[in-house]
Image (cartoon, rainbow, N blue to C red; front, side, top):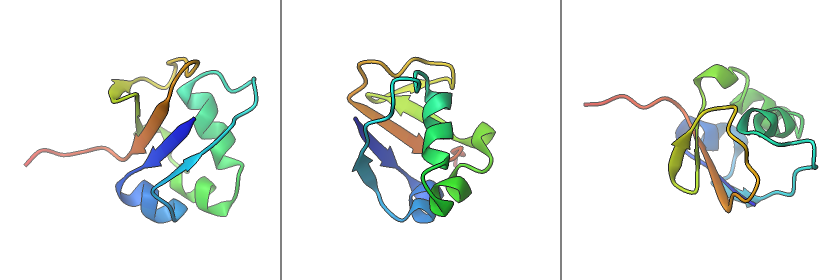
Amino acid sequence: MKVVYFAWVRERIGMAEEIVDPPPAVRTVADLIGWLSGRGEQYAYAFENARVIRAAIDHAHVKPDTAIAGAREIAFFPPMTGG
């Protein structure tokens, strides 16, 4: 699946997007964040406060407990403010 990173999540990881193949135990957005966090220091830094990270599956905002099965794209981004 394609994972896309925005704003400071992208800056901390050091790339805008990548293709990943998480193991079968990774079933939800929260699981994916946990798995990504274990991939290296830059990921751990980007997801160090996972509660503030927002996610979208195929361009629809989702909650951390949302299943990722069948997702083509998952995007992660920090909270947004209006203005």
